[in-house]
Image 1 (tube, rainbow, N blue to C red):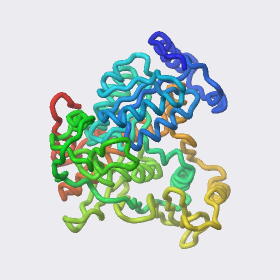
Image 2 (cartoon, one colour):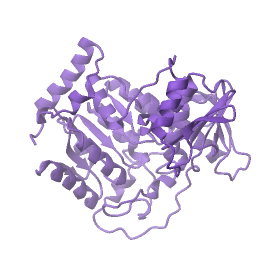
Image 3 (spheres, rainbow, N blue to C red):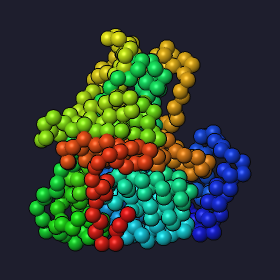
Image 4 (cartoon, rainbow, N blue to C red):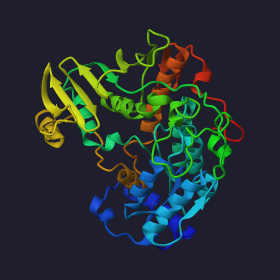
Length: 444
């Protein structure tokens, strides 16, 4: 592998930007970009936070011949070394640089993009720092830890004129696009209600302190979050093979409302056409101790019930659409007219059922949604064209806001009146619900 030098990276970045400005938006056939690419023409990517999720992302980026992993940053020694070894083994050299402090990676001028898969409480700070340094960003979902961070990230992408992709990769799966197109084109009539079947809100972290072994910079892991003693549930040591449970706790994640909600609520927003907007209100659950039953309410008095449906579900005056990963159903009236609604059903082919739904109900659609079949490939292509990606900062930021509003409804057992145009309360509300206390220098 030829190491990318500062002049090469800067020249390539200027070329990509000037080409998009001078010639207008352009999309080249995917086959061109999948062909063998000269080392100096590859997109140089750095990876921040090398746990379970970014291990997979690193491998997928390295599987694209137009990209190259040049650096990794991780506060755990074992995971950091393992990530460097994956890159070195892939390219059969020893040129991938490994950093304990992500700021050292971001400071490099020969890196074109960063891929961030740290815990949620780090996302906004690291994303904005990377954008400010002139890098494009792929950041895992949920894009932010609170409402104000979403606004800050959206503003930063615009200010620094960068490209961002959120890891809400369901939009790059056909079943979710077809489901959303059916809804957007009125196949099930006027939408009366929606639902997402995901787990509960975040919980306060009350884990006991455990002895910290050498090799993990615990202070760096905590970063902007509240200071507390080490616990292996938050950051298991070593190159582990599971998703840690920091996401359960609201100090570092947002429970399943943010974890799975960033996937399923995202599809609700897509199907309702609310990518540039969002809910206008929330309604708390009847039981103050409940972890499901709260609602987001969209314009036109269309509720989204939390805890119902298949995954992401739409119920209209003429029928319904329900969709989850690998399963999909379209009902007209009470009749299932296309779909595979049981993963254990070996007789029904999902692809053929989607073909049927498109052929019969989407022959000449008025609304055609963004089509992507490769979430990382879509991000890399957007870097070249300078066009917005399928889950850009507006999509990811506003989906995260919807998740945070739902969580705050549970946390405070209070309904919210919301102004999605201004991303603030329409009336009442406590500004503290939109942000958090930041520790030390890590303020957003």
